[in-house]
Length: 264
Image 1 (cartoon, helix red, strand yellow):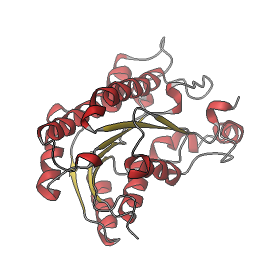
Image 2: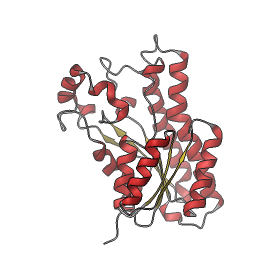
Image 3: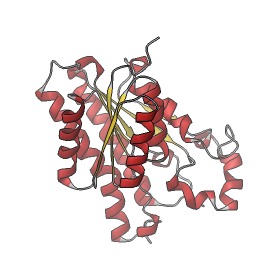
C-alpha cells in the first residue's frame, strides 16, 4: 500500500524537534526530504537517519533569515530531486534570550530577531517556492502545498509563563500571511495551511522542560496529554496537511494543543 506522501518531494525547514519528527514520518510515508537548517551537525545527522531508513534525503545548511538563502534552497533541491511538491516551514525560534518579553520590556533585538526568524524566513522561502511553481504550472500541480508553523500563543495568550510578545506577534503574522496566500493561490492549485501547536517537547522548549512550575501548570493547561506534547503528535498533523488526505483543505489553522486553548 502506497504511503500518504508516496513519491512526494518535501522541503522541510529545521532539523530537530517537530521538523525532524515530521521528516521521519514523511519518509515512512514514501516522501523524499530536503532539509534546510542552520546547524550542520543536526542536519547531517537527520539526513543520515532518513537515508538509512530508506528515504532519499539531502540538506543545505544556511541562515534562512538571509535573503539569498531561499533561492539557494530551491536551487539545491531542484538539482537533487528535480522538483518540489511540498514545503513545511517548521523552523523558528524563541526570542527570549534576545530580549523578547512583554511589550514594555521587549528589546529591539528581541523583536527584530524573532520576527526575522519566524516570519521573514517563512515569507522568503514561500516566495521562492511559489515563484518556481508559478513559472512551471504543468509540473505536479495537484500536489503543491505549503504548511506553515504557528503557535497556540498567536490566539490564546498565557501571561504567567509565556509572555513573549514578539513571538506571539510573529506567529499571528504567520497565520495572517498564510490565509492571504491561500486565498490568492487557490486558483493555481496551491494549498496553504497552518499548524498551531501548544507546548511541545523540543529543544526550543528546554527552559520549560526544566521548570517544575511550568511542568505542573501544563498538567491542567494541556490536560489531554497531562503535560507536554510529543513532537510526533504534531508530525502526524503535518503529514495529514501535506498529503492528499487534506486535498480539499486550504487557508485553515489546525490547532494541536492538547486542550491549551480551551483550558484555564
